[in-house]
Image (tube, rainbow, N blue to C red; front, side, top):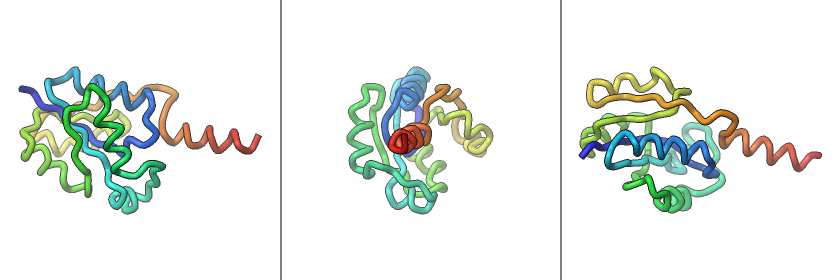
Length: 132
């Protein structure tokens, strides 16, 4: 069985999220999604609309996802890859090169992001529409 892992906050689920999850799942047989916890988002300076538990429930409902684990810190990726016997690490290409250190443990693939959609854009568009 080929295992794939990806990481993210996965707030305000959109087609870009679905596309990366679908493409990640197509690379293997079992997809693990590590979702940033609320505490880790605080450290990163990110604010999610939904709590970790809500985001976890939403991502668990996506048919491509086999397992959801918490992402508590930047350093856990090597341990996650080893603990879950991961074959492929997947991230959006906006992170290209940032996780190449994982090539010692598994294949690293950066997938193109879906053009024109992001959680940041959604939040900006919603905020802008309030001021029209």
